Image (cartoon, rainbow, N blue to C red; front, side, top):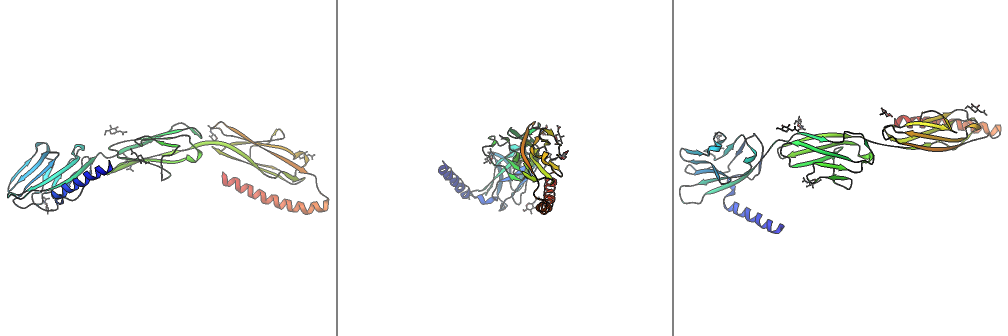
Length: 331
Ligand SMILES: *[C@@H]1O[C@H](CO)[C@@H](O)[C@H](O)[C@H]1NC(C)=O
Ligand SMILES: *[C@@H]1O[C@H](CO)[C@@H](O)[C@H](O)[C@H]1NC(C)=O
Ligand SMILES: *[C@@H]1O[C@H](CO)[C@@H](O)[C@H](O)[C@H]1NC(C)=O
Ligand SMILES: *[C@@H]1O[C@H](CO)[C@@H](O)[C@H](O)[C@H]1NC(C)=O
Ligand SMILES: *[C@@H]1O[C@H](CO)[C@@H](O)[C@H](O)[C@H]1NC(C)=O
Ligand SMILES: *[C@@H]1O[C@H](CO)[C@@H](O)[C@H](O)[C@H]1NC(C)=O
């Protein structure tokens, strides 16, 4: 239980402190494979002190003044003891060097020995990280799986999308070790730059994947439903689609072009009727249509008509400008 483990932790600290933990600074120390570490001591041994360094009940080195130094055969060439300070340098670190090191200063008289403990953790550098994602074309409502692979000692795995940390949710499912991410189902808003970072206390490495989700089309028509005879007809077919959809107008059953903006100048009564815009997405393979009914009204009396026509023409020109700027904005 947390209470018991807390008790043992405190007991541990207590034992350490009564044993003279102050001989070395607090740890742990993190190093990469192949690097070296210097275990320093806070107090130096006295001239008569015997200095020993132990690792997991193995005696690495013992210095018995004035001149006797014994190094464990396994450590010859890898250790160097500073006889003045009692510090130990260990080079060419390997993973198996991880653990607790104990230094002891023993005096030749009967006073109790001084000790210090320091923990070392050795990691392989994280490298060659690759974020492996779908290589096929992604369509909204499908699923997408990602795996983060790499070399070295991996302690943490972190995922980001557009520089924001990705947290688990009903649609974002991580494996127990966080190395695999399943997005199910994918939405158009999931498009973006994905990143996974594998790390340990001495290194980290990152890889990216750009996800593009294809969707649509959804289609709708903007424009007036009633126009005066002789004025212009302007209709805009808008579609939400990735990639951009191919648009086709059908006016009263006749094919009428592929521009999103449908224009007929100086309308007459034959322009009344059914306007259909059909959008086709060549990647999703889907087609969608919207229908718009237009009525062209006969003119009012010539006097009234002139006044209204002037207003309508100005209005139409404003609408053209707005529609064109909308189109160029969305392209
Ligand atoms: C031994 O440690 C002392 C005190 O920290 C330092 O001045 C000296 O340079 C060290 N000697 C070697 C050989 O590193
Ligand atoms: C990741 O590792 C590769 C080689 O393993 C290296 O080329 C790249 O610079 C590293 N990237 C970072 C951000 O450390
Ligand atoms: C990981 O490292 C090993 C040896 O260090 C190498 O053989 C292997 O190709 C590396 N893996 C990747 C994915 O780079
Ligand atoms: C996986 O990531 C979550 C946070 O997204 C974290 O709480 C959890 O500890 C991680 N698990 C492992 C095994 O790293
Ligand atoms: C699909 O249409 C887009 C433009 O709408 C075009 O760039 C792309 O090349 C087309 N793809 C195929 C497979 O026809
Ligand atoms: C209506 O206008 C179209 C061209 O926009 C033209 O072909 C047609 O003849 C006109 N019909 C009448 C009745 O004027």
